[in-house]
Image (cartoon, rainbow, N blue to C red; front, side, top):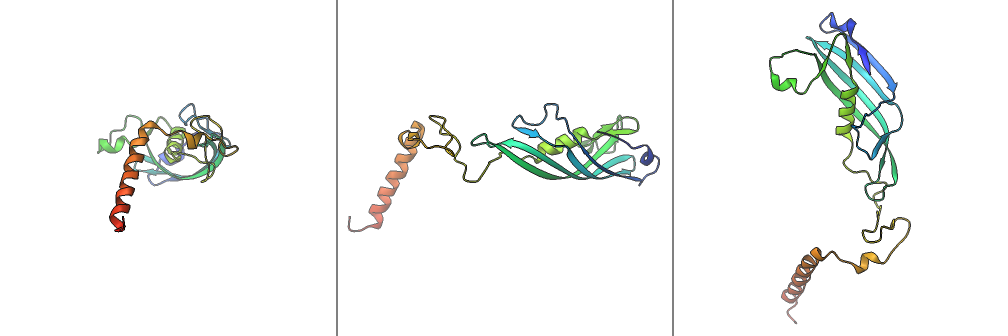
Length: 183
């Protein structure tokens, strides 16, 4: 996704309007449970601000993710406000801390692919769920509880949780004794 910036490099304050819809190859940087199904859409502008090239706009991404509970495919869409700076490779600015947050370019083109991918990754939700009431899989037998039911859940308790269950049961008994003077 290279963009020719020759026209705006000549004059400070010059800008260039950008709008495109292109397929974005993730090259392994997008999480495995996410697939970008369709071309991404970007509309914005590029501004020369004292030799720093500023990319601003909105990125719209349609993608499919797997439900973190039942692994069903979940179609999703995100809108991302993009604000990124590009500096000429080898540029040494006044504040080196700010340089770490900027992308570099060579010659008269900027490649915005990495900036787009980074923004997509940072904007993806940590978990995708097909619905709020998704039951997921039974941890014992592996059946999809959205489609079928099983008896495993009521029979088995994680042994590590028995201590907590006993603690809460004991507190409930003591609470009832203290609040009920007849006993």
